[in-house]
Length: 402
Image (tube, rainbow, N blue to C red; front, side, top):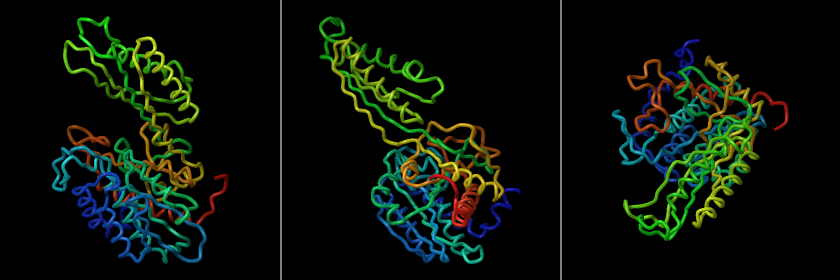
């Protein structure tokens, strides 16, 4: 099946969805400040006659479609927030908000889910939809835990879901392909911030002050051995130091040096071992170099873990609409706060290819690139997938443990 055939059932929706996506792209909003976006979402859902609830987890929106007498329910989720980064793209709909950019495609995800709501509403009777669909529009995915905020605000108590599904555009996959996998699909994300303190002093008299710069250098070297020497080679993990700050003059030993970085892993036991090893390295380097050390270690996103039956439903739905669907060969070390929803409900997270056949001289822009732009040709594919997932999730009781 060619892509035009996949898009055909929703072709009449596409002009409005593309216009909506461009409008959202031109007016990006940061985490928990998605008021304009949430307003557009709520208005769009009300026009369809759905039950609409606003303000979940801050600026989250849930629209509910009830069909027939079926007792099953499914949640379909899209994220709404943009990134705190300048856009360097030159499209007519480029960001009009300085320092804010839809550099991850959440404008596309939101537009897809609105399109799915429109399609499901108008086809519910002819397709025999039987049950409840909750359209979940989530704030603050980009590092602020909007999914956790919605869950803590009673998302699944107020809108029970037998299963929940989400997708993310994936520039690394060609348009028309889709992947997911049972088990881990995205990594847990931790952040560490370390401050090493000496007394400071003259660079020509290092004997008078502990050298925080030297201690920081030794510490960075040790941190980069944790995964290779403290973690089982069969496990997967990444530790990266991403920032070092200290000193202002060529002839002054600074009194303070800060180090920041991230840890990514899939298994909680591995996560525990890395944190313990990191703490031991910090304490050891501080003691050996006569400096004081302060460590703040934050586990801000857990690993995104798909349940097996729902992962296969997601792939079957992708294949049914004509996408080239395959089990992802490995999980990604990027993180995703849909993980908080999957901790409370069975479900699955899908990568939807959006790579262009002719991406231009610089290739397909990666997620979070200042020139990234969502591929509008993926809109109908996401709409169709969301609709197919909803129909399958409501039609069949998925066997097996949850």
